[in-house]
Image 1 (tube, rainbow, N blue to C red):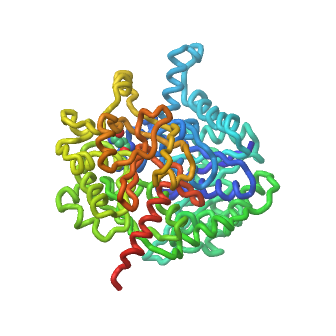
Image 2 (cartoon, helix red, strand yellow):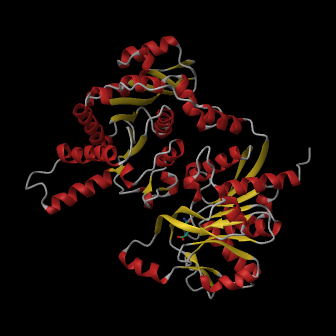
Image 3 (cartoon, rainbow, N blue to C red):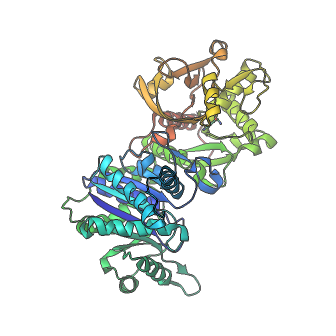
Length: 539
Ligand code: GLN
């Protein structure tokens, strides 16, 4: 088993996750089975309860783990299947260590950061290598070198490298080489200091990945090499990409990062054939069509809050040879100024998942606008629930219909919590989380888009379509297109007499990949393209 550790220096938000994922892409294209893993040095047990404003989206894995959004990059850039073992937080480590301490597992010893916490971390690295089918484990250490909370992780990987030997471990340090305008030059000092900090802990990076706005010339490479004690060819430039994050693997391949990695790890492998990837990237950069897609949500300032959705739209766009122009719309603005002001002229409207009542009425109006104006619609999770509420209010005439999440007293709870689910409330875990099977209903547009009879999709929600209203809704043109295998829960709906109005109770965005867009996103984007061609913009 081979191990690559990726640390970060100077500042956060350098795109370490992306670098890790892109290296994963290259190694996978060289024929290796790759697994990625992220260590997060915060005390939360998982990001499930953290605000999307602070932390970006919560990425949900097949096993229901609520994880850091970098795991989304890992799954999109490689074919690895991740589990809750692949995202470790300080909170989880302490939970495990304290649990052992209470059980008396440490036999009366003093429990300490070294060795008990570091042992726990090392065990998690080993576990991933042992139990997941792979040749190589890439571990990203969250945070920035020099942070107090990151120290136990760095100490653990230092020890780990010693245990598995130098040919089996590679340390990559992702760092910032800033451009100072006043001096008109790139500066190496922050990187030197960051590497010095790492070496103080006992880690000598083998590779420096330098995030930069400008190209790093020979002279600067030589300087970074000398001061940081890495080989000149191991100073890798990672410039900001011009068009799309999917260019990153191609750029790192040009910089020979994968070449360096396999050589260091004594692996004899053919070069990566990136032809299909390159053509995917080309379709993103120079698409034949262009569509404007509105996303109506509430965390609009934070682009990370709906990360997987934006990526899934990009994938579907590349599949349909259509560039996506994203228009982000704050649902509360719709409440104030009406839907038409923001949504007219769009080729497609998407309402993502969400929790809490803020902006819900605006989202309902957005779904109504898409339904009435016959604009292609895609509703994800809450986006299905509010579409059902609109349908009940506006088509069935149940003016007070609502989800019990937002109005527990509503006379028409068209979205509600199941009795079984309520039982769970008492035990604390109320959320339906993770992958489950959905049967698709033949003869529906959604079934046609999928082209199969059943699918597995990931969930993260508490409330459900209330079957008491199903018959009445179906009489009026709402079509149930997908159900749980027991026929009890509605998973997918569409509308008759509409070019594309589809909504799902699950989160398809978590399973979309570059050359394998999700059928619901593909159907939506294709409908948006058709919508645009129908009404060509005035020139
Ligand atoms: N708040 C809704 C629920 O809990 C929807 C959740 C979501 O969109 N992920 O059911």
